[in-house]
Length: 379
Image (cartoon, rainbow, N blue to C red; front, side):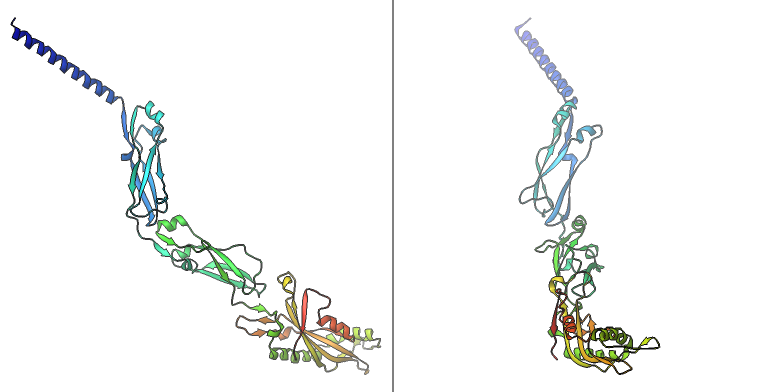
């Protein structure tokens, strides 16, 4: 065999061995490749942005591969917030970093090759929000008042028919049993914040968030200032009070018996009936009585009245008489929302009569009740 032939044979053997080694390497690689399942979390994850520009929210959803449900239950996508990228306050153009977490031990046991590190999502396509101003938020609030100040009860309701205001619920914060003219009422506006964001409503807040302070105005109020009582109204009470002495014989009999007995004067009856009657009275003075401020709102308390004092006499048919002072009272003097002052004259009645001036003074000066203050009115 020639030297050239031996050389060719050697080269052929080397080439055959090289091809065999390459083939074995490919087989080994393919066998190793076939042992693993590759999972690309980035390709399986979609990002969804909702809300409006400046108030956007990023959510992610990772699809599940059939047969690998147990592994995908361990997959968690974290949204990494920063000072400039707070989820729920995102704006168009923000770049939000997300990271993938999963059970690495389980992935190894399942022969998984998992791809998924940190990546960035760019926020886009958020619409502009429809601004609902702080004042507009409370535009549907309507107050209802019942009673007379300072014993007014307050309620609030939403009368708006325009979205999204019509869906707002107004609530009085720390409500009181009664309110007075000028009192402040704090109202809180509540609404579905998620629905507002989803519908791109940018609802503005005030200094106290979604609370606003209102002042009670335009209500009737019991008069508490004697100087505010008009002279013409007092004159009406004086004139009206004088007429009660001729139209209330029952009062004459009731007070007459007491007065005659107090004065020690004999009285008679006719046919078993008393015969007391009033003599035409003369006006003496009048007093305004008002409950003291610290007792306002106490249950069962009268707020004010005007007491008109008359001088006269109670007489009987036989001519015997006793000089008597009598008091006519008018309750509930009201200052209306329009500024006028009114009283129901028909509710005036004779409240007391006595032959003792001290009894009348104690009554008109509210001497026996420290809850009230009495003021003599100018004539």
